[in-house]
Image (cartoon, rainbow, N blue to C red; front, side, top):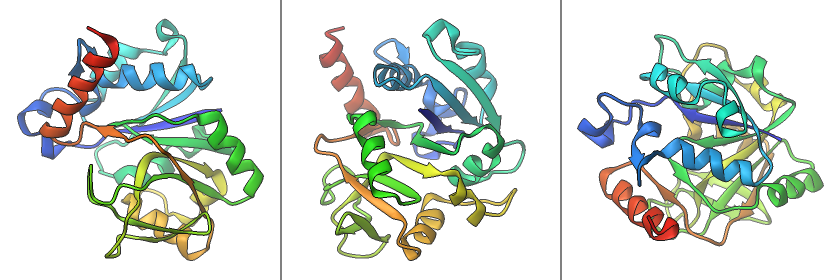
Length: 229
């Protein structure tokens, strides 16, 4: 299995914390946040990683290099001078990607069995799958509706589910996108929803993220407790 991690955003909600380092390199209990992500996916048998980088990307590459020191294989896809958004960055990495691959956001810390998710995706024969969580606005603003194992809306009112932080894409889905163009996650997933091609796989354990200072402090406390460090 292969995963593309989107870690090229500007992280404006983190203010001064991300002025000199990429968001994914912010330290959590002594290690860059991205290192925890890589350790997690490696435990689930994913060692083929594409990092979609932009802002201060040299600091990510100088730390992780080709990934061999961490027991994985890392390739880098660079946004360049133009902001492409999270899904534009995936489109930009298209030549590095396999026919089916996971994507994950560079600020997400999640607890899901990637092998089980992939098996469910293969059984149901859709072009894409999103792992979702019945959030009900508790940990962040809910933005999805789910029905009959499909995501049926994104960004509408009265939503009770949220994007958990990882999805699976068939490479054919990138044919719906233009090259060198900005795409948000909402732009892209709405296309898949209209085509009824976005499966939903429900995660039961809460997610964490580092998207704002409050959430960053929460994940720091969680990691310290988990690692007893």
